[in-house]
Amino acid sequence: MEKKIIAGIASFGMSGKVFHAPLLSAHPGFRLKTIVERSKHEAKTLYPDVEIVNSIDTLFNDKEIELVIINTPDHTHAEIAHRALMARKNVVVEKPFTLQAGEGEDLLNLAVHKKKLLSVFHNRRWDGDFMTVKKIIENGLLGRLVEYEAHFDRFRNYIQPSWKEDASVGTGTIYNLGSHLIDQALVLFGMPEAVYADIRVLRTDGSVDDFFDINLYYTGLKVTLKASYLVKELGPKYHLNGTLGSYIKYGLDPQEEALKKGSQPTGKNWGKEPKKLWGILNTEKAGLPYRGPIETVRGNYMAYYDNIHGVLTKDKNLIVKPEEAINVIKIIETALESSRAGKKMRL
Image (tube, rainbow, N blue to C red):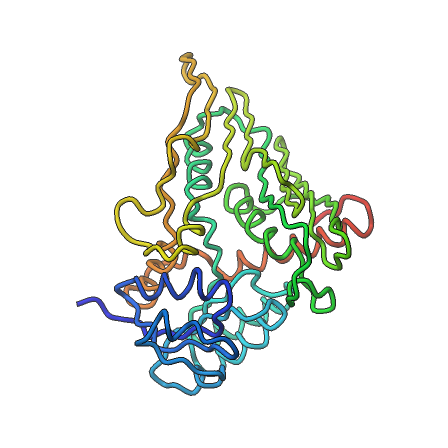
């Protein structure tokens, strides 16, 4: 019988409600014991068998809880993850890992000292479209890749009351959506030689950045990462060009929307994308031209927690390592510095 890891979630905001609670409760290798929910009363309705508490200290003081999910506001990640590790808990931190790379390095050193798991929820590695892009590159279907462009655009022309709109706590789209795009680029290409970024506030009365255009410099390859909150007509999510051809992909991975609607993240059709959204590959391999749709790999956010369970019970290798999450923050810090200075910054 598979060993169940006893878990607690530090908050029941968007990430707790949409991602962590559904994934943990559906995974046979975990038992979601406790959720911290301070003001609203949604968790008990959705998870009647889970203990609902209003203090995060309950997670740290409960000797039965082995894994704590830190999904509190971004600026609290470093402090609360530190407290969780000091309480000898294994820790998963929602992205962004921390606001400063140095904070992440301190947490990594503490996790090593305490001999505890520390990982960051970079779930977009298991977006079906990204896994398809990764497969296309690894199989050399475009020849030598020369240009990679990835977007994470939305249309939100309003300012909602939230810590996410409070510039004083250090937040913005670069930390939110940027963490995903940067992590994906680093998975594919590693750390760049230099960074140039244009980061702006575009929305009326906005105080945090809601637009970025980041260029990562590699030898022989141009990488562009973009996001904006004022894109009503969406362009491609991915656009790749190589010496043998191109790949272009529209649409978003369906998993987040399905989770928002209350669907269970299980079954053979979970994460499958409709054929109308498959990307188009136009290439020539071994002298054979091809232009047409490429089936999108089935997305699977559950794979993240599969790996966490395997690390804790079967000594598997950790996939999303804290060192990698620290590199994401280093790129964000460099991008912010580049945007302020208006010039390319070497790493």
